[in-house]
Image (cartoon, rainbow, N blue to C red; front, side):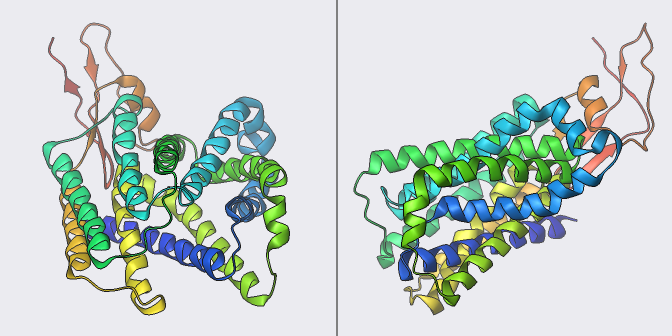
Length: 350
């Protein structure tokens, strides 16, 4: 189970690697700087697949029924998801690659804090040790970039770029924890369908206002078309597969796993862009994997709270009635490998 969880996270990292490579070719080789249009294509695919699925469902899972109950929540989530992508991509115009790689790790403490306070997830010492090891591995990769003189970007206004990265990482964290809550308590199809609906709506507006001139400058040919198709396929795969991995593991575990995405891009860049190799890259990769193994080696758990138990319980599992006299609460374990419920109720002694 632990190895499966690590492997699932690496699949997501490989998809992000594909997203990064296609974006690099589009921006540097063909001068197509269209981050909003690229997001718009992904949201349209999500809309066509998942929103239409919700539209043909019956009863409470129908699209209109969901909109009547929760439309404003998904509208906020769709806007957060769109701007998280936009802010990080925009930051490349202002700050250096090293700053983006380091500050993007800010998403990890954001996810941990939000999971702690809103999902009531509790961590053990080994989880924090695994997180520290993963971040050390990321720092090793950044150090290798500096040593080999990897292209860092213009960095003309670092303060603006750094603030954009921090803002994007914060929005990513909010989106990921919200996604975890939805896929555990509602459904993956509902989450993706509503993200496709509102993401397409807001990205279409932003595209018309901010990026229509850039889109007209794109020198369209079959190569550019193929790169857009490749980008959209990787992005659609990432959005479709991530809720599955988050439900099996957690938002924190997924973001730790994604730290290897930059390394996969580097390994591809050795052959495609003739990057210089450093042994520190391999050290960084294996350090992050060791951190992931440490994190997945033991389970997180949910703070004892009957309301959370009601939200996260297995519908097929036993339901324990609470006696009025003794405050007996069911024990719930919320793990990075799945959820477990104990058949024996645990008695809390005041």
